Image (cartoon, rainbow, N blue to C red; front, side):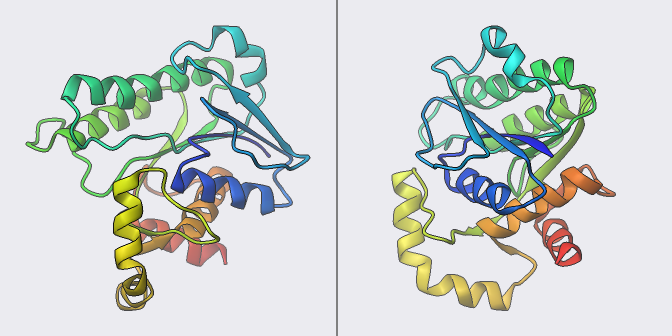
Length: 223
């Protein structure tokens, strides 16, 4: 399998990239982002671009893929809706539209979030924008799936690039194993998300929108 990974320097993206490189059935992994990951692996290639809205110059490098794991995202804290939509809806659909033309029918798995608003009309800004993004992806000629994780436990030395998230994870780190034990279907690890993405890309899933409990079920079935 040949896969693309975006947001591979973020917390979720690092976990997904790690699982892809550990999987012997993944032949090639290509990351797309504004900076290199720093990971060295013979199966890894990286496309580093300042402009993540225009892929016309690298279209040949985006052909022949089986799956795209879209993990790129930003925090909505302190952002106006127009700016958040430009970075969330705009960047996601730009790549997805390009890939749907170059690799029609490929698996496209988008990391959204618990509480995303599919109606696009709710009071929570980030949830509306994420819902708009999900809906746009589901209309494209892609085999698209939306992942909506809630609480995520970083593993394997992975850390969030967002300072506020790092502080929260540091404070709650002693509690995460307890929460994972108490609510096993609601707390996911970075390993879980990566493994579930690979499984869904290969075999599909009965739902196009996967909440935490669905992602957990995929991991359990694959293990």
